[in-house]
Length: 325
Ligand code: ASP
Image (cartoon, rainbow, N blue to C red; front, side, top):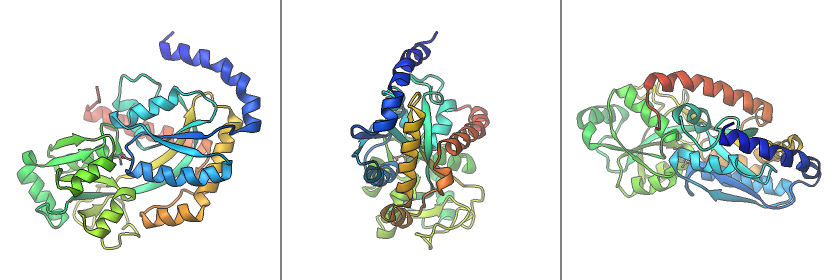
């Protein structure tokens, strides 16, 4: 038996014994929400808004803890190995669907290590650059990147991060290789982009919208089929000349495998309440996104969507042959 399998077997009786008590009194203490990326980034922003609204419904604080690094796998590992009692949860994004294929060696099970609680939101991405980058439009950017590829660097949040996937798609669409600069989240990467220390980045509108509006960075396109309502002047990649350059970043909430079903149901209900919260809805709207409808914020829908997305990405990653290890 592998170490992970043994750990799961050992964890099971405790989880079963704890189940009835936990279901009744849950939550009995503050909940820790792990964000697998640095503070100040887009996943952090979504997580903090949700945490605050869930706390009101649950009657306990939901404390956000940032565990960034290794493309989001360190934070995911922390939750997979936590006590399965619902007091430790994970907010993660599309990386949960690519990591099982991208990483062939992990210290946790990236699929069976978790229970799904519900989906949260699907966030558009934008292709952005430092403010003084010498290209005004996407067409100019494409020409510039093709000419200067060796001298351009591209920030991301590590292998498996959404910024990494979007950067890969950009490089394969343009058929160029750029130097990538990994951070433990696009929060710190954004500081360097604003400070002019890196050239380019793909990131969620939940991190880029306010910088684009303030003019502290330059934006070329949204990676969605339609324009983003909060950035009406920004063309889609297809409008700007790069059809097929589309990525949207779904987020979901997870608990460690073995968390009792009634506890998962309670967390899912709190998530659904949070997604209807006025402040969440209006902040999401300001940042170019919206909550998923209630039926998608459920454990069953989330599990099916996640599994389908793992199956969608597996052949793409295998064909590209780029793995994290
Ligand atoms: N947006 C980041 C990513 O590339 C993660 C983050 O910092 O939230 O996935």
